[in-house]
View 1 (cartoon, helix red, strand yellow):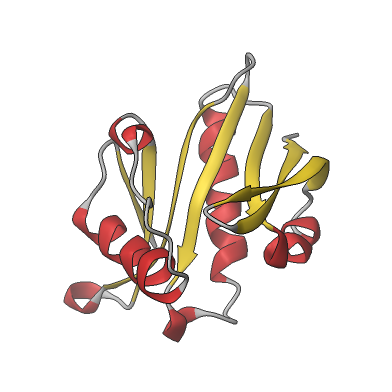
View 2 (cartoon, one colour):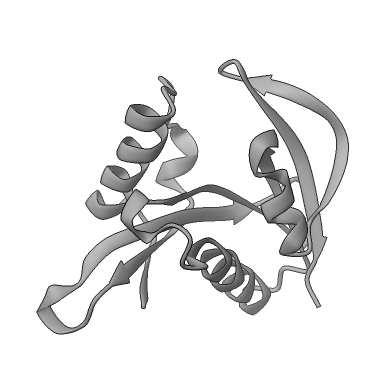
Length: 142
């Protein structure tokens, strides 16, 4: 189950702090895009026992009908449960519902195979973001 927010919800912020800041050492995790992006927060459990497990954000891209997906993060206890793929699929469904036909993301190179398994194709050269190799990847949404 997930909830959709039009602001950076505290649950999204905490997941990203844990994964990107504490685990991976990024220093510039939060930016102005957070103020305008749609944030999807995924929860584990039912009823009152729901706990935040994963997150992503998306926002309009550079071209018409293109959306950017980013800041996909899953907390350690929920990894290897296909939550990352479910997060991507939910973001893509929301993007299609908003008229998007293409999703683009900047993947960490070490996660490239994950995105390829989910239908993304690398485009362009590898680049550094905070000393971490990334690559642009795209997917046409049908």
